[in-house]
Length: 129
Image 1 (cartoon, one colour):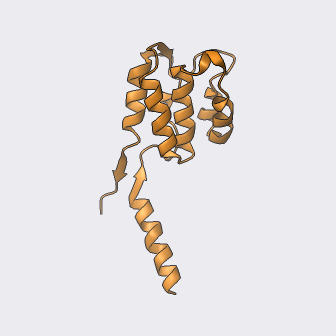
Image 2 (cartoon, one colour):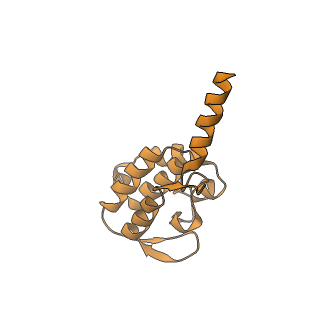
């Protein structure tokens, strides 16, 4: 009985302090980039974060500092609940060369602005009582 109470209390505490992106990557921080799907945008919008992360972790010499890859990798990690890894990927994107990125909604935005916005979403949200 005591173990059940502790588990319920722990579950309630986790429900009260949940990362803003735990439900997945919002469309406005998913980078579409190229039509061949090289940035795993389809996997991210479908909610297949593990598959997206696997595709995006493979670093080619010319993509090590690619902010589009790093932002979407952060999105995949956030969708999987790996907030420390997500923050690290977004931070790397913020400090990589600035680029204009094509977003899921078709808009073009600065890679640094997108990375900053994505990082801000990782701040814990506290539920009201």
